[in-house]
Amino acid sequence: MLKAFKTEIAPTEEQKTKIIRSIGVARFLYNQYIAYNRRLYKMYQRGMLDERQKHFVTAIDFDKYVNHKLKKELPWIDRCGSKARKKALVNAEQAFRRFFAGISHFPTFKKRANQDVKLYFPRNNRGDWKIWRHKLMVPTLKQVKLKEYGYLPVGSVAKSGTVSYTAGRFYVSVVVDINEKSKHNKDLASCYAKQTEGIGIDLGVKDLAVVSDVRVFENINKSSKIKRLEKRLRREQRCLSRKYESRKKKGIETAAVSANVEKQKLKVQKLHQRITRIREDHENKTVHEVVKQKPRFITVENLNVRGMMKNRHLAKAVAAQRFNHLLSKLKHKAKIIGIEFREVDRFYPSSKTCHACGHVHRGLKLKDRVYICPECGYRMDRDYNASLNLRDAEEYRVV
Image 1 (tube, one colour):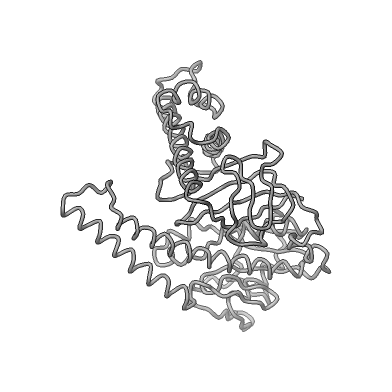
Image 2: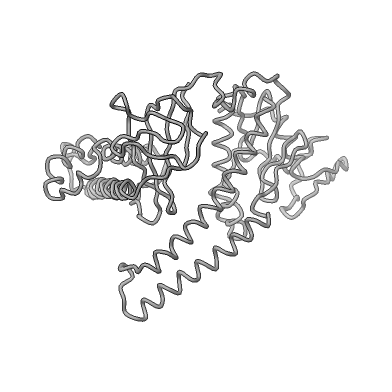
């Protein structure tokens, strides 16, 4: 079975320079492809192109243009590997395909500050992506030391991998074909566990998740650790903003960033990353706790997160909960273990329906945290009542 692993690496100074430079080239080509197709798309919308003229260029055609023309004008493009360059163009093409299919918005340019471009390396030669205890063989970069041991399956060979750079740290993600009964398969125990009754999960802002079997997973953003880090982040962001303002007053261009500004930006990036990692860890632990008992089915509500974000009082709290990330992880784990994943329509009144008599309490407000049925007098926590209704829902969609 194929499984992905991610760990931090400790490259040499020469390897660091090569990675950052290659990522810059890949980002440049991605943006060039977006700009070229954006220009064609606008011309097509205005009626400047007829049916015989191309109004969209594929990644293969643009790669030919890069190899035959653009590389002659900009020879530094060759500093990045050909496979990594082509993968960046394929990702850009996929972004346009998703837009044409109505799945996502119009593709945007990738910024250097976001650090969201990765280098892709397939396994072309026999020695590529070989994994040892303390190092691994990365194509183009040769042998790279691992910062932490034990996270990658030693002795195996990866099919492909990516190298990324975030907040001053370097990471490698590899796809490895491992044995199903290997110790690196963390879902092995859940796959062979005895199946239990199905559950309903109500996601919310007060608590991350309330399960119909009485389990409650707390909102990690209310913890003292996150609050302390967010307070520190605000302070560092103000410091960075003051540095930019002082440079503007002195008449220095903002683009010409000083070493002190770069140091401050790195501090802000590290804090952002630390907060994100804590949230991701909490999500992973929550998903593991839910699926390890192997329920017969998991029922959740199809949340309208975009609509929830329009409420300016709740937008920040909703964004911090990362509902879409949690649901995608839960869906993925359920598929691996063999759990039926159900989605109830977003208009289903799970919070307003009485689990005892089925009466829908239309007057229930968001501030009312305890559900009291006006018909039968049933009294229960609002979120727990919703999780019970989701568990017993008869109309749902299996994902």
